[in-house]
Image (tube, rainbow, N blue to C red; front, side):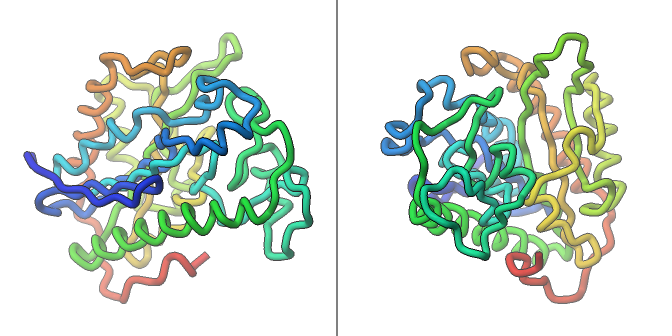
Length: 298
């Protein structure tokens, strides 16, 4: 256990919490727990201050803070997912959201953007529209330049540094999921996404599943979440970079109506700490080839 840590911040963009000693081949990320809402964004939204937060993975950064205490860095976005989603391609945009034509390089047929969940989301929660009017592409470009690219540049740097230090890197991308509203729907407590085995060595997901299950939690693999852009983009097991998306049921650690944390937060964090330690002890094959430029690899 590490008693001290130090952090670096880009105000309004991200914070990286480093352990006093980087002793584990692991990086943790919390891309959707940011809650620093720009004033101009709030004024352009049709939603109230609580409703706009429905897409937040609130407090996941507190759960993932076990990483630095155990020897692994944590990167967390400070801006909200409703403003910009870094777990997407840079330009997954819905043309219907904009009052001007989009450039040809934009992925305007993204299935995620078409349902309102692109790089610039259109909705939060249960299909609640965010904006009262349309946006300009220039606004989207500013957000992408200021937030998206710096976040992924720093995440790629952490992955590269970890892989060079240990010969392998395991990126745990941490998220939360809402309780289903449909009556009778069986809800898992944890969903582990590894792209159906494509983004990390099998023993990583198996170890995480075993630890969560031994702690009394119901675990599913890849259903309904097999991993987002970050999981697919960074996961390169053949060159020693493994990614695992971890989805945590919000009802385990917070009141979903008031968005306040509960005593369950510390219990979930303690289990995640066990997962981090157990995965770190795995004897994964070391990669000796140079680390690829992950930002350009997709």
